[in-house]
Image 1 (spheres, rainbow, N blue to C red):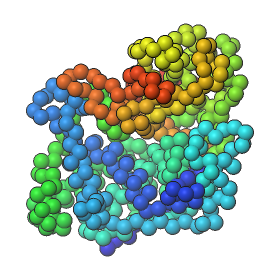
Image 2 (cartoon, helix red, strand yellow):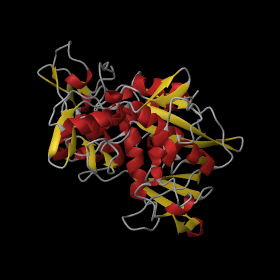
Image 3 (cartoon, one colour):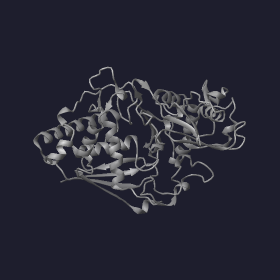
Image 4 (cartoon, rainbow, N blue to C red):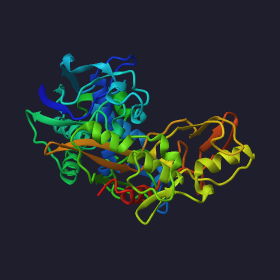
Length: 445
């Protein structure tokens, strides 16, 4: 039995719980986040797609070998059929839990944008220490290293709890009893690739020698044949099914600006301004509204960037939301792309009376067949020389829940609707388009 003892410190407020308003970072929450980043890194090591012998088929057009993914994951994390080879213990001082709710973090008059759904939840404050202990119960070579580097990757790109893609729940590792903290993307990914191959080779030996879990003949029969694991990674011509850190399918960008406090950074990204509806052609990038909100409205087509200035788009039919509203009103089924869908679904729009000519107030929704798709943009908060900065990761993934290709033809399952009135539209998986907009808005270097 081996113990891996790690201490982390929160950089931004952390929201986590079991469904009530209380804060609780549970071992299950930690496991869930590590599983997410494990799935993101595994396709860099193991070929998890199968083209059934047709070399012309690439990426999404192929069969995704979820069984292989699931079986490797269950070996490392456990499942309903296999006991986990490690336990997780989480400890923090309850005195560090705020006695105020999330809405107290901002001015109650505004700026609840990125807090949506967490306004009434209690949170763990900044600079709170959390002890995470992994107890390794099975002798799996490299498992302790993998868990540490996955936690290290989480600290580099993400966080724990709700709204972690908006910058909440960010943390840094401040102490480890075993391994050195890595602060560069290339070294971190390289270490993860090496230790994953080490573990998979260990799995192969156990599989063939019928050790550990493979002593169970029924389980071994139902397990993917590990002798067939292929390290030759296949190229993807389009977006992977879920977020993966595959080459050319993600990009990591650093913020230009530095901030004295987390709330200054928060305002910079998310501050709404009721006066933005009066935006005119003379307004510039200094418009008093959060940069994330500017990004969404430029992607939507409501604003455009010209000569370093952000302006109202005079071509009203390029505003995808506006175009969608009038299409529903006129019972038209137009070809519309909602570029802002890159930032997650559903998107709920609420308009008031006389906001659009000839349109009554109402609620509109952009969604896919299952109603939800997480944002492909991750905002991580970190500190450098006492100043707050942010890191933005764009990680491509398929926005549709159905197969993107059927008999070689592209299909969509994105819809825009008001009540029962709906029609199909196009989503956006174009990472470069979002990347270019971030650069033009000067949100990142």
